[in-house]
Image (cartoon, rainbow, N blue to C red; front, side, top):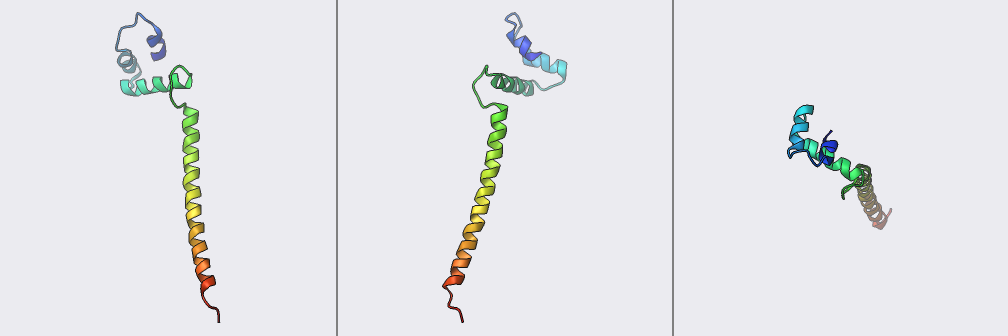
Length: 88
């Protein structure tokens, strides 16, 4: 509804407030949804929803790899210290 109203040049200002009231949605929330829909459709510059999801997945993977790397460094330091000790 909001996208159609935005495309109509004769539509008065306040599209998001009017449509938001009809749908029971906050106008700013509706504005964000429309902006994201325009980005996803390639009508506006920005990061698409699928790209946002992929970035979120990669960031989670990066956190896990950093955590694993930290554990491996600690284990490596521990075993290196054990090897440096004289054995009886």
